[in-house]
Image (cartoon, rainbow, N blue to C red; front, top):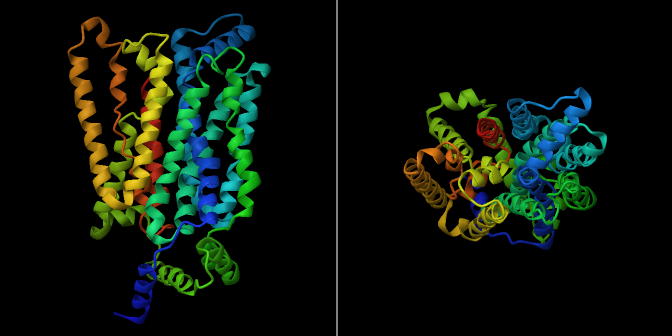
Amino acid sequence: MSNDEERIEDIVSVPGRLTPVLALATLIAAFGSSFQYGYNVAAVNSPAELMKAFYNETHYSRFSEYISEFSLTLLWSISVSMFPFGGFVGSLMVGPLVNRLGRKGTLLFNNIFSIVPAILMGTSKTARSYEMIILSRLLVGICAGLSSNVVPMYLGELSPKNLRGALGVVPQLFITVGILVAQIVGLRSLLATEEGWPILLGLTAIPAALQLLLLPFFPESPRYLLIQKKDAAAAKNALKRLRGWDDVDAEMEEIQLEDEAEKAAGIISVLTMFRMRSLRWQVISIIILMGGQQLSGVNAIYYYADQIYLSAGVKDQDVQYVTVGTGAVNVLMTICAVFVVEYLGRRALLLLGFSVCFIACCVLTVALALQVPSRRCSSRRSSFSPPGRPPTWWGAPSTGSPTSLWAWSSRSFKWASELTASSSLP
C-alpha cells in the first residue's frame, strides 16, 4: 500500500461528528431548498377545482365564453406538468452554475426561482392571469431541479464520510415534510378557499427568504474552495468550522488526492459510461432506480391526490384527510430511513422499498380488476399511488465522489420520468 493510500485509510478510520455548524447548515440548506420542492409538488392539489374555476372565469372575462372541458383539462395538465418540466431544465443548469457560483452560491441564486414565482402566483388572481401561474410553475420547477441536485452535492461535500449516508437522506426528509405541510395548509378549513389559494401558492417564498438571510453565514463547500477556487486557506477555515477541530490537514490532502484521481480518469460523458463495462451496469442501475421511483406515480398522486381518491370512492368530505394521511406516512418512513440507512445499508433499504412498492401495485391491480365495470375506468388512476417509495433513492447517486457525473445525470432522468408520469395522468 502506498503512503497516499495509508494516509487515506487513516482519515477514514477517524469518524467525523455532527457539529452545530454542520447540523445548522444541513437544516438551512434542506429547509430553504428541498422543502420548497416538496411543497410545490402538493400545493396545487387541494385548490385544483378553485383554480380551474379561476381559469374558466378569466377566459370568460376575456372572450365571453367558457373553456371546453377538454381544453380546461389540457390547460390544467400543462399547469401541473410545467413543474417537472422546469425541474428537468433546472437539472441541466447545475453543472455551469455550481462551477461558477459554488454550491452555496448556487443555492442562494436559486432562490430567485422561488421568490419571483411566489409573488406571481400570489398576485395572479388579482391580475386575472392564469398565464402567470403556468409561468410560475415552470420557474419553481427550475428551482426544484437545481436544488434536487445541488443540496445533496453541498451536504455531501460538507459532511465527513461516516455521516454522508444519514445527511444524504435529510433533503428527501424535507421534501416529504414540504408535501405534508402543503397538504395541511391546503385543508378547506385553512387556505384551500376562494380567497386563500393564492396565499397557499405564494407561501413558498418563506423558506427561500429564510435561506437568503441565514445561509450566507455558513461555509462554502471546502472541496469547491480548494479545487476550483484554489483557495487553500478558505477551504481549511471552512473545514475547521465544520469539523470542530483544527487538525484538518489530512482531510485537505484527501480532497486533493480525490481530485488528482478524477483528473487522471479524464472527462467521462454519459455515453462513455455506457460504453465502459465497469460502469455500464452502475448507470443502468441508477436509471432503473430513478425511473422506477417516478414512474410508480408516487409524485403524480400528490399532483392529483384529491381527484384520484374521489374517483376511487373516498367521500368528498374525507378525501382531504386521506391525502394528509398519505403525506404523514411518507414523512414517517423517511424519518426511519435517516436513522437506519447507515446500519442496514442502502441496498437493503432500496430492495425493501421497491418490494413493498411492487406488492402494492399487484394488490391495486387485482383490486381494480375485481371492481364493478361502472367504476373501473373512473378509479383506474388510483393504481398510480403505491405507498412503498424507498426514501434512500435520493442518496443513491451521491454515495461516491460528491461531485461526480452521477448526481446531475441521474436526476435529469428522474425529472424526465416525473414529467412523463405527471403529464399522462389527467
